[in-house]
Image (cartoon, rainbow, N blue to C red; front, side):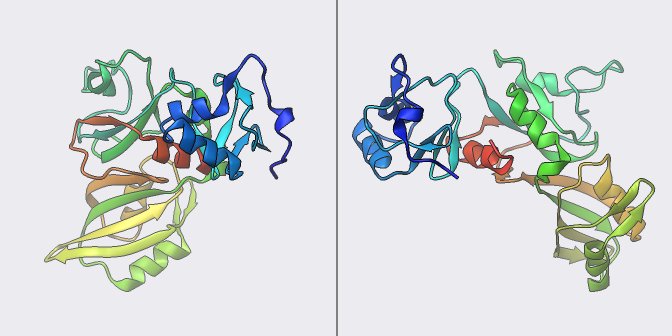
Length: 252
């Protein structure tokens, strides 16, 4: 629980908190002063109400309304819409298309968070923030991922119930957190599934187990980050709010 003692976080050599907030895009300094006075800001777990508080932006952990602010401008997190046929690695010894080509113009040394198999499309995160990447990858945080799958056959309601209850794979059981049919045509069905599993090809194996092989798979969401209208092969830097929500989801 946050404490309410501004002196605990005051750094005489630091930058005024309202200037830090304004620099992070929360509005004018005057607007940021009002945010501070309202008790909406914590620094290292301490509610900071005093306008004279100074902090070190490189070290302070600042939240506004529970949302983490990334104050280290050297860190960046990027969303990529990975096309089919691209392997989730920065370099492929076999010469297959890899992720490096999509961020070749970035000055940072980026690495991908998690992976998608070569034929799966959609949202992949890339970052140079090691702490964020480690937390996103750690199973204890259980960040939910949403997929749009086109599968063979007509999917009956009982299939959704079975996937919610769990199916047994060769490396253990898996169950979905959410399931709904989006559309169907003769011979195929489009379904949306939500799960927090990160095992290799788990969505494809799950649908194989229930008799509906996947013909196309797109990841559309990771936690609060949505693929949206990002075109295949294109990237975008995460905005302040969605990055803050993503960091908060993994306890940062």
